Amino acid sequence: MVDTGCHILGLPLESTEAIKTIHLLSEKKYKIVLIIENKETFYALGSPQKHSKELSRYDYFLYIGGYSNRATVIIIKILAASGFSFYYAGDLAPDGILILQHIQNIAGKSVTPVRMDVSTFD
Image (tube, rainbow, N blue to C red; front, side, top):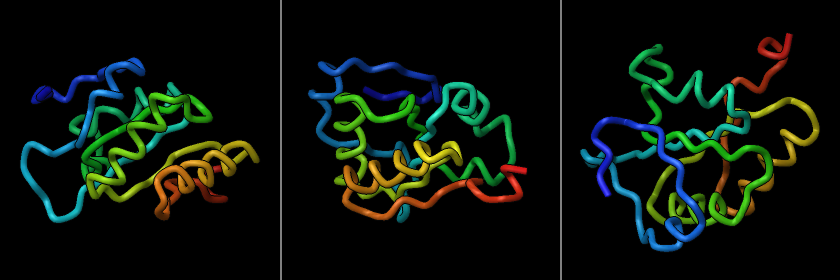
């Protein structure tokens, strides 16, 4: 499956189970995924071409809707195996931090928080 239009796609569990690897259309040395906890934030950030250069650095946006379901667990593992670096935009509430840790455990690699700091909270 190739998505040259940067569309928002929803994939059920059965579809994610069929995915073996995720590649970018143009290979880069560093591939970056931004995992987003909240739907409103996902829709706001999910179109990097409409926003700043800061957002255009991400190659893949993944909305997880809180704690990962089985489909998102599979996608996170595939992204990790495909060599992506992980970033996470979530709530500063305790569950947001726990979800960040949960993603790190699934991916088996570090996940960098994005705008999860005091100034953003304020």
